Image (tube, rainbow, N blue to C red):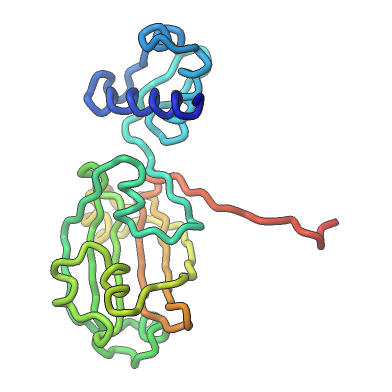
Length: 240
């Protein structure tokens, strides 16, 4: 019941922030005051505000108070192979897409090697900029073999995972490589940020359950728009 209450309180505070009751940079009322407003215990309100802080909606400053951040960070669990749309929607923000274009283009060397085609052979290339509540947060490019998905197959698609699954090619697992970097002029323009903005680039190859590579993707995530989490196992018996 306590867990349900803190989530309910967090949802209400989140809605008040989104409605503009407290603007970015403004201090929200103190925990005791908010607790009195909602007729709940201070500990329940503290737990709700902690949830908002973990989500990036507010920032506690010791001895000063709790302030609304200029933009909430999206929580990205790198151990879960979610589409960008589902990732954004899971945070309660509205996912969107701009600069959406699918075409047949020559395969770059790394893409050709992963998909098992000749370098320069035509592959379906789908490039999009993903938005969260209207803010551009991810520049995404997907590649797959033409015989698996043609550009026309993606005209009405929301998810390339769903489009592949509909053809019996559902991705079962993916291997990702993460590289920190900065936005060059092209990516900065597409994301609407200054050149040199910090990025986390995720290069991934997705395979079916029987090991067939069906998708290569490259996602440039704005570093200040996301918090990244990763489950690390161990240390295991060899450390004892």
